[in-house]
Length: 137
Image (cartoon, rainbow, N blue to C red; front, side):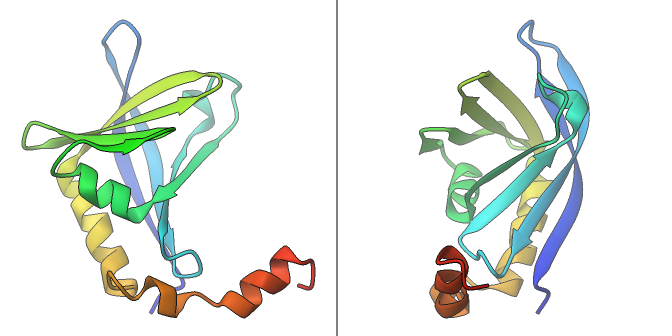
């Protein structure tokens, strides 16, 4: 099993005036953090010119492909048959990003091949995680 999966993807940032701006993003999944997925946006997509990575529940992304899901900082919902919308809330503002649903399904399929649903807890190395938290590693 791969420790980390990375998949480049194209996304569309929806601007406040309703236009779409194409972005190259990276989708990531790590067996070391099996409950989460990451999406990294390039520096040109952020207000401060820094690359931005959002980390949120893999299940949230999966649920949002078929019905509105989420609360707090990340919301996901289907937009027609072919697109999925991800909405990110931060203290700096709001970002609305659209993906082709097939790209997200392919990515999730790869994550479930690495760590099947329901097996996330067995793939966690709790001793190593606690050691890191306590400054031992």
